[in-house]
Length: 607
Image (cartoon, rainbow, N blue to C red; front, side, top):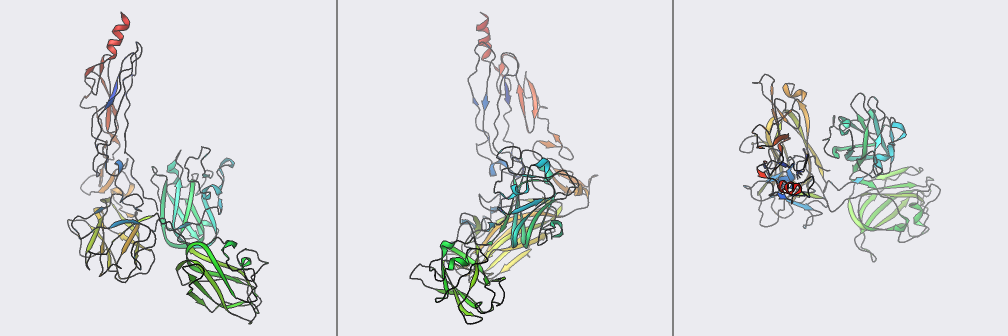
């Protein structure tokens, strides 16, 4: 899951040049770096002035500086709540007064039988890639539906490299993808158009279900809104299941333009390969070819050995019997080996309820193991004759070991009861909020995971979320509605168990607006990323907390930086959170305070 930013105000470059006849310098005011309130301010580097370029003609004097002395925290962007921990902590902070810290980590932990094998963000497969897609209309015969599942996330619709869908302007335009079968959907990532009109996507709904009429399927959450300064948004769908995933605009009369939709599932049926077959008795490759008219027909050795080329985590298996009862499989065993020949086979699953007399696909689960070598053993057929199997399918969990998450390391010197606290950035809101996150609690010594909402100087007595003890080797989702309004911090506490197998992990934290107040903030009056706070003592019923550079009741007025007349004999030009000085002939410098070198060049030219 990628996290959402506020307005990007990272590195600034100021360029000053002559504006009219001979020598006119424009320079920026020497002010602190324009970093949004709530972050640690950075500082400007020294000005780097060029030599005046006056060769008895028009002269130029340029200067530049960067906001890197120091670089502002979080690169000058607003500290944000949502975090997948892929790059950093996103403004979340460790508590200096607790017993130990949370650890940012990738891949599996170093201890066996505890901790996750991979992170949640990158632990899923994009099951929409290359699937058949549809949309309600097509704008001027361009922007076809398949472009949203072609793997290209480029947000430039007009360029040749762009790959976006585009409907006509219509009521509630929609796009949807057919996944081919029902999947459990973990999240949906939507990539917006960036070269124009990014606001058109807001608001939108996501529908997931088995109906090809997209709006008939259940919605994933409510109305979603993307930050138009960001290329994408990741929506957690908390394990909804369906064959069709659709995007529908809530707007009454707008075109729908999206550049990619990624539907992420933790699991997927593996793409089969005949090269997997190690022992080819009875031509076992025919059970992997997808052809209805072929089948595996062993006379002896009723088993298939598969080498998947790399370790795979399997969670389900499916078979298509021949359908004649006499040769239909009634029972089988699935085994695995961590080493190649000579193999060391271990039983993974035993199935004794396979139906005969049907060639329909039958699926079986209830296991999860990882190995490179697998053995499918037929234990019994319905008629006692040799088995005949049309198809064999394996359901695998795929993941990327480069993904990051947070976890508590409970190895020495940790003792039972030690606490690690992780603090969110400050949340200021007039609405209830939905906190969503994923957690992993696997190991014999797992203790407790708590989530608190802190409004004062200390943690409240009762958490808004708590889990204790082992929860299995899996990522689990959680959702908590936070009814507090005003300002607060979300605090996540991990408590150490009695030994090293007590590792608790955390990933993909999001905060989404729930029910908003019906008072002054209901209409979202604060502009330019201002925060609205309910205040019944004011005539409007609210107060706007404005970012630097904006003022006024609704944060709509650009602060006039020229009020102090900083440019001396020059002309001051107001800019957002700053100003520029336009100097008259024979003056230059930060505030037009120094003689201009080009004056001497002009004097020489007149001799």
